[in-house]
Length: 461
Image (cartoon, rainbow, N blue to C red):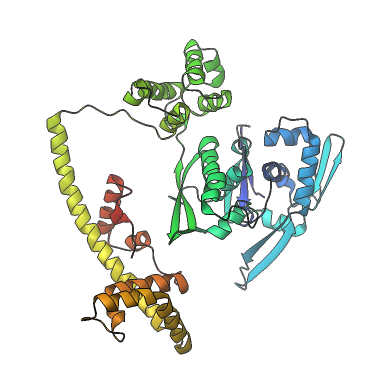
């Protein structure tokens, strides 16, 4: 579903899609997702003025990048859109109450020769028109996607453009947003291989975003996922390059194209996309960078196409040669800086542990009497093996009456409470850092820039 449309130079077809329409669960196919956005894009200017809209099949195919002649597939997609119901909740501005609404995506459709007539329900039109919260969907980018999972992930990420990452999605909800039917890919390993990884690869290949998934685990189970977001480097940011037409008529461009197809094993489609989105000199620099690298010369690059695409997207830079003295001085300074950063981060972690311990303790103490007793009974049953071990190994220090004072059991109680109680208000380590004084935030960010995977930046009991 979508919203306001913007045309820029007749090449950029952009659709403002309501957040409620993006973050809704459905099992739309790739073709249905593309058709949904294209129809709204076409109808938007007269959305509230007309009860029925019309578009030629040829126009529709052009908007979604559909080059086949199988109009029966489009007809089947329409039937699916009429029968697919989405639901959403919006807050009433006057009363503050939450209003639940449901509607089919399209109310009706009629194919008459080369023309397609379609209509939206009144409720759907209200949702789709002039959204206050939206994500901008580029129909040109949309047309490149090859799977419904990839397009669904693009839509759910584009809503957070300009932020460092999306919100955390509970896994059950995220699977619904991706259009995964209930009971399918229940094992995360299968979901990751067949849905998540492929969707991320498509977004990074076809869109103007670079995304990276992050997961939260409880034990061995993945319970939440979110995505780091970066803007993709564009050719206009990398220096004015030649147009595709000019490049096709240029000997250098032909040689580059031949090398990309031959040496680097790219497909015609991948080459076309690179030459449109990046300056040819920028691409040539990355080609030269890889060809000069030791792994390439020694034949140790397993996926040469993927290696080049990653180098281009992430703007890999050549390593600069430095004298041994310069390297030693730099390393010595870095060690001093890192040692100080680690000391500051350790202080932050101690503060966070104290904050987290106190917050969970208060949550337990504030439980009603009967609920608290029931909770503690459940915990003692859960922790019985650990309690027995502590009493056996430290019997001179702990008894049944004071065993809860042991650090091991305190930590286990916090883990249990975090899982069983409603502790949604508790800050994560990163959120806690964001509330601190500026110098501590700077220390955190510096260590993250040195080593984003440093164990000090993660928290576990």
